[in-house]
Image (cartoon, rainbow, N blue to C red):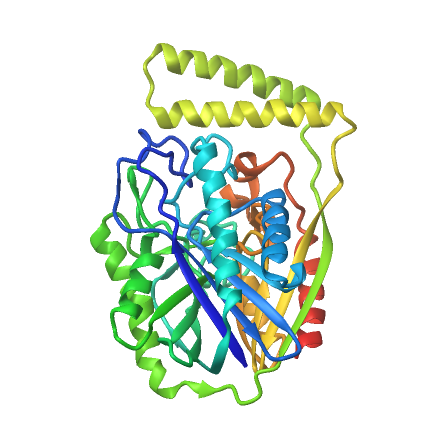
Length: 433
C-alpha cells in the first residue's frame, strides 16, 4: 500500500454568511477555529482511490459532479473512485445548498472549489509506503432529536426517537517519513453551536480533530460524518461545550489505538451504483397558490411590525419554495425521481459505505450488519439531496420529513427510498467484500 496526504486551510474571510440555520442575525464576525479540506490517496498497485474531507455543510449534486470532474482531471483518479465528503458543520460558509440560509459569497465559493481540487492534487502527487490498521470505540455524544415521537405517541417502532449509533470507527495510516494519519467517523450533527453563533467554526468536529492531533499520536486527523440525519449532540450552546463534545469522541478513540488491528491484506475494491429514488408528489396548485398568498401577506405584516430576522427569513424561504414548486407543478410536475450515487470502498477488512444526504442513523446501523467487514457509514458524501429518513419516519412526520426539503429543493423523496437504498447497498458491500 502507498498513500499520500495533504491538508489545506479553507477558512473563508470574515464577513461571509454562515449557513445551516435560517435567520442568523448577520454575517460572520470572527473565526473561532479554522476550517480545513484534507485529502488522502491510497494505491494498492492496482486500484487508486481518493478520500476528500471538507469542513462545509455539504454540496449539491451539481456541485459534486463539477468537483469530481475537476479532481479526476487533476489527479488521474477515476471519478467513481473519489469520495467527496462534508463534515456538515453549521458554522461554515454558505455555499448555495440551502434556501434562505445565508447568501453565498461567489468569490469565496470559487476559491473554495479551487482549494478542494488543489488539496486532492497535492495528496496524489507523492505517494509513500504505508501500513494500515483499524480500531473503533464508542461515544455518548449522540442524542436522537426525534424523541418527540414518543411524547406525541406517534412512535412507529420501539427504537424510533431513541436509537443512536454510538460507534466511532478509525482507520490509521502510518506513512514512511510522515506522522500518522487517522480517518475517523461518527454520526452526530455539527450543531453544538446554534443559530445565534456568528463565529466560523468546524464545531465539535474541529475540537475532536484538535484533541486527536494534540495527543502526539496522530499527525493529521480527517473526519467523515456518519448517518446523523436524526442525531444531534447531547451538549449544546457554548464553545466550552464544543470542546467537551469533541473530546467525548476523540478520547475513546485515542484509548482504542492500543488495540488497533493491522490490515494485513489492504487490497482496495470500489463499487458504485446510481439508483433512482422516487419523489412524492407536489401539493395541488391551488394549495401552492394559497401558500404563496399567505406567505406574502405574513412577510409584509412581519416587516411592518419589525419582526425578528428568523421570522422574516422563514417566510421568505417558504415563499421561495412555494413559488418554485408552483413553477414545477405548471411544468408537468417536474421529475418523478432523483438519481443518486451509492458507493462502497473496501480496504482490506474495512469498508466505507456512502449516502448523499442527511441519512437517519438507522441506515448506518443497517449497513454494519450487511457484511462481516468493519463499516464506516458516511453521510453527506458525493452530493446532498437533503434528508433521507427511514420509511417509518414518514408515518411519524416531523421536520426532517415534512419541512426540511423546502430549504433544499421542491420535492421530497418517498418512503420507498429506504428499501431501494438498502437493497443497493447490500449488493455493493457484497461486491467489495
